[in-house]
Amino acid sequence: MSRVDLNCRPVLAAYVRLKTDPVSGDPILVFPEGVMILNATAHAILVLCDGHATGHDILTALSTQFEVDEPTLRSDVVECVADLVQRNLIILKS
Amino acid sequence: MKYRPYALLAELTYICPLHCPYCSNPVHYPHGEELATDEWKRVFAEAAQLGVLHLGLSGGEPLARRDLVELVAAAREAEIYTNLITSAIGLDRKRLVDLQNAGLDSIQISFQADEASLADTLAGARVHQRKLEAARLVRETGLPLSLNVVLHRRNIDQLEKIIALAENLDAIRLELANVQYYGWGYLNKNELLPTREQVQTAAATASAAKARLAGRMELVYVLPDYYEARPKPCMQGWGRRYLTVNPVGNVLPCPNATSIENLTFENVRKQSLAFIWHESDSFNRFRGTDWMPLPCRECPQREIDFGGCRCQAALLTGDASATDPVCEFSPHRDVVDRLLSSVAHESGHSNGLIARGNP
Image 1: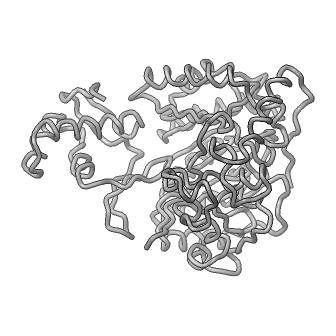
Image 2 (image 1 turned 135 degrees about the vertical axis):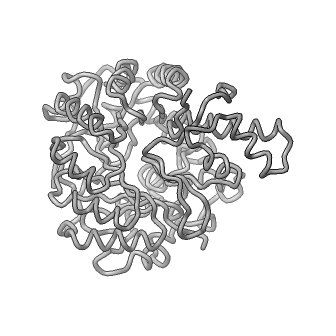
Image 3 (image 1 turned 120 degrees about the vertical axis):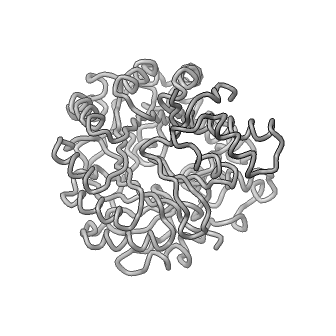
């Protein structure tokens, strides 16, 4: 899970939709194989995955939103991005 | 709202040009006319109202429906993500572009093996080369391509070549699912069940490839559950997340559910999808945990595996409400073990495969 380089610029793959669930109001991802309900942290991370911001930029932006220590936030970002990279739902741009 | 469907599998037709001996369609096709275009459109609109966000368009071969483009457009209109699950037979450039323009989001193509000789034998038709051409066309249009290869004794040893095929075709995802032993697969189990050694070798190959391909292609390997000690969380729980509408309009909590005797299914021609989802006996029969027998009822895993698969329990124990006999705590686990030991003795002998027929 530590393979995600924070200098990369993550972006959601073109075939992934980040939406608000019309039933629950929760943020969700919809993709070729199904639906994933996002927690608040994952949602905040994915909103910032625009292919321009680096992992470091995303960490900086989140640190103003969440009152969490830096190591925790860093591991949240790395884990969330790595999991979605593994599933080919996020692409890492250099 | 405790139960809400996220995904709908629409089996548009039972017609298929392939005759795969592990087809997930029922061995005994139900009576009735295929749903008409307007009926499917209504189903999609009702599904969206219920909360469905994702649609699998399947069959049979969904491309056999001449109204497929119109159906994709209707699903897009209802803001549902669409995934076409196809053999790719009938997928030419014009059809592909029309589907894409109608809003199709992704395509999953089945392959039977890594090369034409075995693939065409399994499919009972000369299709492998046409699938390769269709897969390349899909990538030319820019649509995301997933590959699905059903694994069994006759192709599982070619796993490395199957993975290489998916890489060559630039797939975003490769699903390597072992045969599910119901219906046609169960009829052919003595010809299809891999040995324990084959399964272990394949798992190691898949695991190494998954690590190697991370970030390029997602690789999913599903064991044949007879070799597992705990059951699969079938459908993520009965009537909990998913529903299937079959070609004649029956609504099923799982695509195999018609194999369960003494369970009757409602039809979209007679009832609303919301009524069927919330109120029908078939959807409520195995919902939650109240229906569970021991040992499931007191098991700490009961909200994780949901007691396993109802169809498998019905098929192997005669009781759809029994603990899935795959589970090491099931009083019927010996049924599965006997099947596995007969495979160990029989592998190498071949009595021929029973090919899937059309209705």
